[in-house]
Image (cartoon, rainbow, N blue to C red):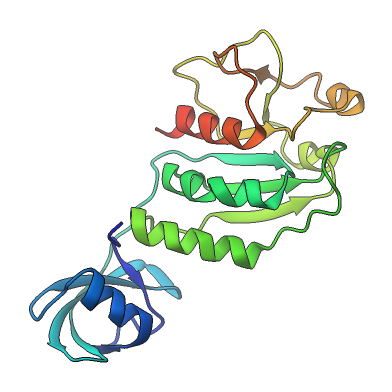
Length: 225
């Protein structure tokens, strides 16, 4: 898949010299040549899009010159904060690109009663996965991550959360909310259900039992797309 833009620590400078793996990608895979224009962003100012022109292609380097720099924000018009009870990290990693492309703003990972407490979440690795996705889909903002020790701790801070659960309430096609709680495999414990008893809950209109990560993607798609 082609990149909408390229993240580069020196983007914004008047000239760039591209070497190594990025040089290989631009020349041997994407077949860029003199005169082509490429988009770059810098992690320190990711909202600004820098447009460069290829001025020289060598065997080990591509030389670029800056054409323009302007703020150009690409993000979802809506906001969605997913509170997600912790599941296996590999399962999370598989759907992070999809959640990023759909436009999820933030994920709060919660160690609920049925989460495996020995699961360690590597946010640095998550960020690398997001950056690959951002360059492909064009998104110009980083998804936020944080963690909570329990559902009780989370709902104390966010009282407006909606709850995805096994129930009779089917999510309306025009539903619109900004915060949702998704359980891990096996759902919520009895203690957690009592804590959530006064929260608005819903299910998706399907007879299938969804995996936690499938539910997260499905809900995000319904709300944001």
